[in-house]
Image (cartoon, rainbow, N blue to C red; front, side, top):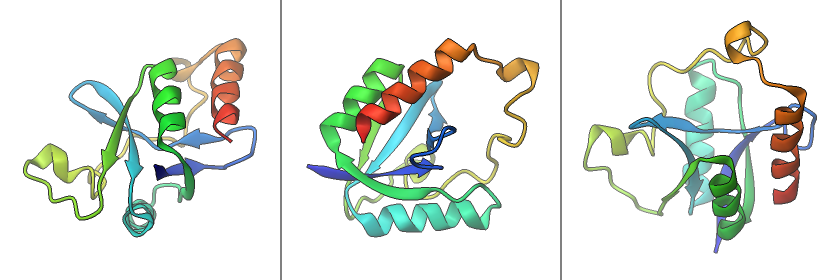
Length: 126
C-alpha cells in the first residue's frame, strides 16, 4: 500500500522526516489519505513550524526505515477517529513543538558518521 509521509527539505543534504514523541517513542506518521497528510502539514505551518512536503512511499519502505532507525511507524487510516488525547496527535500536531531552530547546539550534536548513516537511510526510501 502507498502511504504519505511528511518530509523536510526532500532531496537536500539536510532532509528529514516528521516525527512525534508519543509515550517515550519516536513515531513517524504514515497517512493513508493524502488530504489528511496535507491538512497535518498545513497545521504545522500554522504553528510556525517548518512546512513539510507530503511525499508518497510504499508502506513497507517507511516501516523498514523506522525499524532500522529505532522509530515506530504509525498508520493513520482514512476516516480515523481518535479516542484518546494521544490519538488526537495523529490528526493534529501538539500545540507545542520541539525547537528545531538550533540543531547545532551541544545537546543535539551528532557525529558526521551518524548523520551520513541517517541520510543514507532516507535516500534508500527514494
